[in-house]
Length: 306
Ligand code: GYE
Image (cartoon, rainbow, N blue to C red; front, top):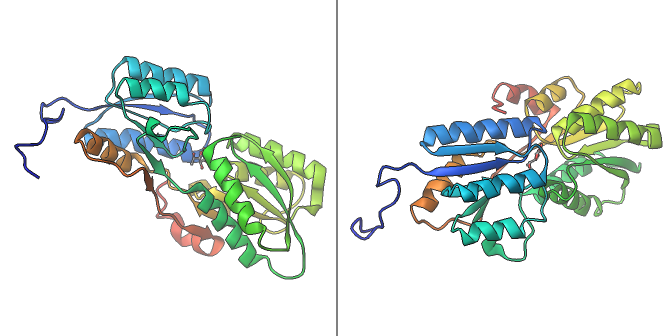
């Protein structure tokens, strides 16, 4: 491109870019790794980061975004707690001319021009991958009964991971979902939901599908307290594949984890810079991910960065 014709950017003027990041909470290992990644990447990229945490309250998250708009940050990024309820505040950002990047969770708004780009995983595909693994593993005449531990109600990962999983499970005749429970991606919620599931269904449960590692680990604890062996008496699968999940696979208590990469900081900073340079961003920047089992966990554990 012709450097003469390029508009002067903030960087040319020696001013640094200001990014407002409204984190959703501190609910999981995934989230902690994500926060670290964003903070480190901003520092590395020389981007001024205004960071705040909504601690699982959508109201607070909206307040934080409103404050960023008032402060006239250059770009806003956030991980929307739920898919819905964002129209108003996103409209305010748009009117203020501040582009918004969705980090790891998508929104459901009628007007797609209210956000600029989504950086994160394909949640439906994660659910599908969990189900494909199950279907390959549990074959034969037996009917397998599944308990599903869902993440935050109406959050994009909970919606996608449920939909993708059920889509594939339905194609196989030997599975049945006994019950679905809903928690906030925390260890404590996972444990409580599993205690309820065990009270209702006891030994009938063959499989526990948790929408994230922390809930799976809580469920593992509940199953052990109930006197059963997670990973043997019941197949336990989860999503994220963080270090604690790898450890649980190594000790044989977790059977499989679908990877969801939280280290989105570098991609986010690149997107912010590109935006500030006047480049057009792709609407969706999707991370590519793997699936891990007890066989591969041991070798991979040492390489695990989150
Ligand atoms: O899987 C879960 C977390 O939005 C992708 O939120 C993220 C999810 C992640 O708390 O552990």
